Structures are given as C-alpha cells and as structure tokens.
Image 1 (spheres, rainbow, N blue to C red):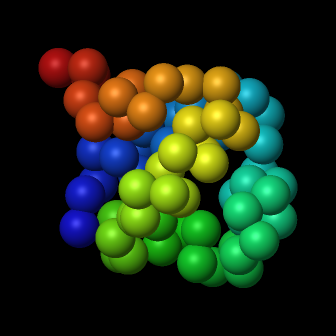
Image 2: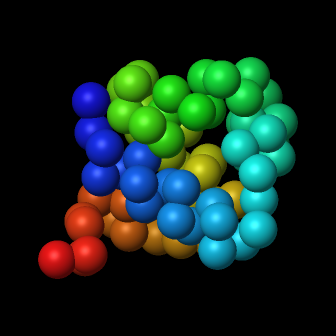
Length: 69
C-alpha cells in the first residue's frame, strides 16, 4: 500500500475542486474503490495512475514523491 501516492492524488484532486465521485466516474469505477486508492487500502495500477494524472493535469512522477518534508 502506498499512502504517498494516495495523498498526492487527494491533494491534486482538491486543488482542482473535484470530489471523489467526480474522479471515480471519469475512471469508470465506484466511489468507494477510488476512496481505497486515495487511502492506500488498494494498490493502484499504472494505467489508473496515468488516467488520474491526465484528469488532474499532473505529470505521473508528481505522485511518487512526498515534498511535505
């Protein structure tokens, strides 16, 4: 489980003003499944991360590093 990726997805999602449901719908998944991605309860597939990066207008490598300290 990778919580850094999930935290970065959440931050980018909130910056854009999207709800979990908004993103889940765009990914053709249920909101609880997307929630598990954000919380690190479910592994994220590379293909999912690529789609999320496009939706949130971030490079894929943005999600791999915790710059918070």
